Length: 245
Image (cartoon, rainbow, N blue to C red; front, side, top):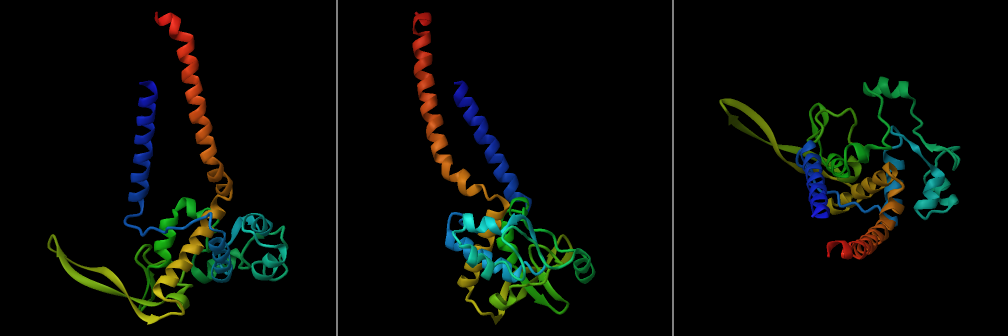
């Protein structure tokens, strides 16, 4: 009975946590990223370095770690991911100075090392796919008036917002009901979604590199606990069988 109550309580806590996480940022698309797919992580690393690291850093990740976890050789990391005079021992930091970023964008681009944990992979996935162009520049349905422009526009293309005017409680409101591709990019919609999914997978990995080991051994830990619980139950029965008589 005690074990059952503990399990029920744990399930309720986990369930409420999931509800809170889902409701924190509204309706988000499912990223479907897979941190155990090495090919996806490798593609995501290349896309991140080429499209994101001009402004954003990953200050807690060393280039050397990529050779250990992503199955890349030191030569491949230095040639394709560590540009300039970077060394494998260096952290993945942007060449942009903090002062320059603040002057150019009004706010210095944040470090993205832990964004997948603070925002969630689904948030990043939806955000990167939700840019649309207006007369005043780029906007986003997930984060209104973002300081960051749409750096992936050449891959996705240019989206325009489809709006609808409604009257709600006597107040006239214009709402975005969908986004429509106005100018095609280098990738198809499915290919672009895959590219963003790769970026998300890489950011998810960087936010917690130990996840590659932790989840792999998790099943063995659960099996050990199940076996230990079973043996404990047998021991309990053996100790108390005479007392119960």
